[in-house]
Length: 216
Ligand SMILES: Cc1cc2nc3c(=O)[nH]c(=O)nc-3n(C[C@H](O)[C@H](O)[C@H](O)COP(=O)(O)O)c2cc1C
Image 1 (cartoon, helix red, strand yellow):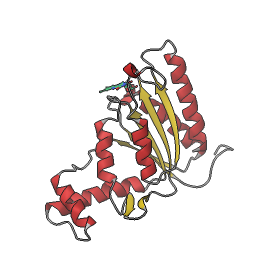
Image 2: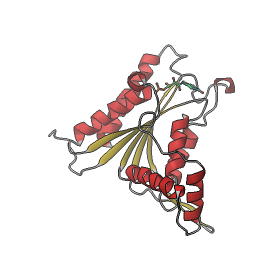
Image 3: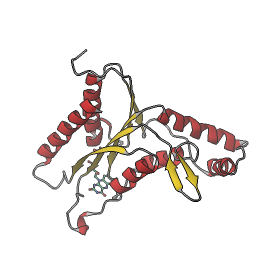
């Protein structure tokens, strides 16, 4: 065991939203972070939820009916019961971790649709959030920490509007905060296709991932 090792056992989940596997830049940065994390926490569990390989349940009519039945104090029945069971299983698996790493490429200024699918499955009242008419929403994910890796090949803050807009980081960070996750760090690799410094940007992103991984 190395001398900086933490002794408390934690569970880390890397939620990977790029389909590019070994060629994914966001995934590579996440893997650097997870390797550093494992080095300082040899007992920790680290898993990957690959949103392109690990099939999520559909969230269609049966699930919406079930959501409505549950919201009005009833019980989902028939097809809805199966749909709700799948939703609950997906949420409980996600909630069983206390550290999250999300690798999130920008797609058309926003997040890849598989990540929105994941959000729509797990964001349920009584699981991820509660709602009160007077006080509004309360996030129910407690004691969690997240690192989000955002990549985009053209967009970066400060460029003219013709280079795009950011519906990625505000939307995803906002979802995490809504869910109750307030300890959020970000790593951004941006504009790598239109700069001479792509290698330097990449090296900096990996260096930051290593630092965050050690302390995570
Ligand atoms: C379908 C698609 C849409 C994209 N849309 C944008 C975009 O709106 N703005 C941008 O800067 N880059 C965009 N990109 C580029 C990716 O964000 C960029 O290549 C990123 O590094 C990909 O991360 P990954 O290597 O982890 O998959 C897009 C890429 C794809 C495949």
